[in-house]
Length: 412
Image 1: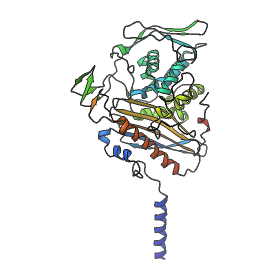
Image 2: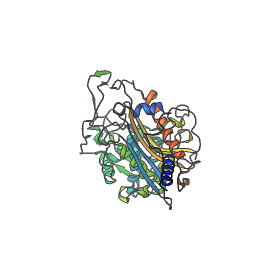
Image 3: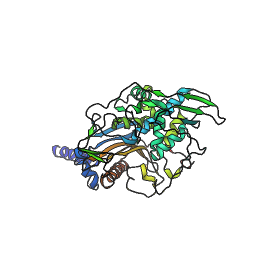
Image 4: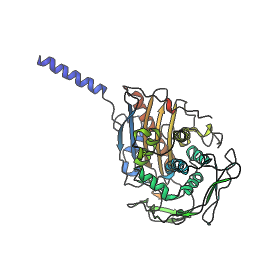
C-alpha cells in the first residue's frame, strides 16, 4: 500500500512537472542569443519588461496576469515618441469636450505663430484636402510617428491640460512638457500657438489665442544619462541632463495601451473619455501598416510593415503576415528603444500585452549617432517578441479569446 502510494505521488509529480507552464524570462531562452545577452546584463542595457498574459472568463472578459522584469518607475529613461500616444488620445478627449456643432476630426485646424520660436501650420500636402486636422495629425503620429503632428496637438492642448488629464486617470509617472525634435527652451515650450478651427465654408468654429502655462514641470530624481554628450557639434564631458524633457514610465505606457484595448477593465475615472468611434479610430491607426494608408501616403520601401513594429518583426523588412496585428507605439532616441504593444494572432487566438525598454549606447556618449540600436536593440525586441509569441502559442487556454472586435478594414 505504501509502495503504491509512493508510486502515485511520483506519477503526480512527474505529470505536474510535464504540464507546468514555462516561466517567462527564465525558461526557454537558449534559442534567443541577443535576448539572453541583454537580460544577462540588465544594468548596462537598462532593460525593463512588462509582459501581461491574457486569459478569458466565461463571459469573454479578459483576466490579466503580469510578469514584470526589472520594472522601476523611478528609474528615468528618455521616452522619445511613445509620449505621442497619450497626446493623440487626449486630443480626442479635448475635441469631445468642446461640444461645438461641426467641430470634428476632419475640421481644418490652422495653427499660427506669434513668436520666433513658433512655426505656423496652415497647409498639409499629405492630407486629401490639403489642410491639417486633428484626425490627420493622429494618423501621422500612429502610422510613422510624425514629430510635427505630435507637436501641433501638444500646442493645441498645452502641457497643463495634458498632465492634469494623465493624473486624473492614475498615470502618475508621466510628465509631458516639450515639443519633439524642435529647438525650444523650457520657457518656449510653455507657450502655445494660436489656433483656429475652420469648416469647409470658411466659417471659424473655434479660435484659441496664444496661451501660456505658468506651471514649471521638472523630472524628479536625477535624470542624467551617459558620460558625455554633444551640443551643436561640441563634446561636453558630462552626462546629459533630462530634467526638462518628457518622462513616460513603462508602467504608464503599458496602462495607456491597456486602457485603449480593454477600457472596461478599468474604473470609469481611469479610462480615456472618448466615444467608441474615436477609440476605434485610434486602434485602427495604431495597428495599420504605413503602406495601407492613402492619406497620408508613404513609400513602402522606407516605411515597411515592421518600421514601427519592434516585437517579433523589428529586424525584417518583409511584409508581416495577415494573421498578425500589433496595436502599439514605439520610441527611438538617444540609444533608447521602447515599444508598448497589444500583440494579436487572429488565426491561432494568441493575444498578449508587452512593453519593453532598452538602452543601447555602449560608449555612453549621446548625440554622436553611434548607438547599437540596429546591432543589438532591434534584435533584442525581435527575439523578445518571438519568445513571448511562441510561449503563448503553445499555451493551452481553457476559454478561447474572441478577437473579432479587433479585426478592422485596414485598407480603407
